[in-house]
Image (spheres, rainbow, N blue to C red):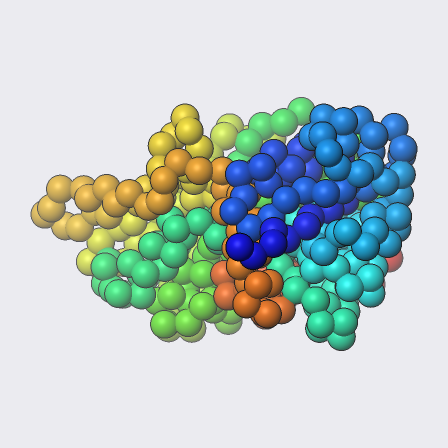
Amino acid sequence: MTAKLQWGILSTGRIAHEFATALAASRTGRLVAVGSRTRGAAEKFAAEFGGIKGHASYDALLADPAVQAVYIGTPHDSHVALCIGAARAGKHILCEKPLALNRADAARAVAAAREHQVFLMEAFMYRCHPQTAKLAELVRAGAIGELRLVSAAFCFNRPVNPALRLYNRALGGGGILDIGCYPVSIARLVAGAAQGRPFAEPVEFFGTGRIHPEAQVDEQAAATLKFPGGALAQLTCGTTMAKEIAVHIYGTDGVIHVPFPFHPGKPAEGPGRIILQRPDAAAEEIACGLVADIYAIEADTVGEAIARGELESAVMSHADSLGNMAVLDAWRAAVRVKYDGEL
């Protein structure tokens, strides 16, 4: 039996707890350590999950010889430095999205991983789920004819508080980076599938949005993308809007609706599913995968890739991450959201 990949988690926040919980269901990995900026937080987290070591600094975790791979769940502004530090320490890396604040910084993380020959993947967990693979397969096979439009939205309503990470400009706050990355990612995936490729890059882009006057980060944004061949994408994200998280894909011969595009398989929602509607036919509901923890699926995607000796994953390659960041850069520029230190 192959030994399980030994994970360390950098962060003790909400998403770190979700990933730690998921590792208990992983076939390929197990949690051995957590690192925090404070000893108290690390020890509390370690006690909660039991049998793991709590490190009072991120550097201490990276120096732990028991840790083979790290999950980075810290705020956006720290991702690149931790990716580079992990690569130099010889640790494989799963880094929460977005990989960086901008494409230039993301390229530095990729370069460090390649230089030190460690695995690196941006943690778009939905890319690892069978539902996403089935979606790409349907589009690639021409199930709705020629692709015309991808409509993707990720919106919710959360009170504005500049002290929170989501609205903290110093931490890379704002909806575009936090949730707009998902509609961008799935639009590029679908446009690529229509061309028989893993992803596609837009040839035209228009974006706009609204900046919250107090937080000085975007609270609402919209974008239109045009891809090679003429397919369009209409993308929306918002943090002060009624909840809407859905994807519709329109072709010449049908429509695909994905009710839960970015977190499929939750127990309350059942297995992942895709609804295919063709003219003059009843809607067809396609089940995709079992009810399962999507973060466990993600951990196993990483573990299996590392076991094969791969340094990146086909579900979210380095080039795919860099392309996504480039679109996010353009979107933020259009809305005029700039972070400290950016030119």
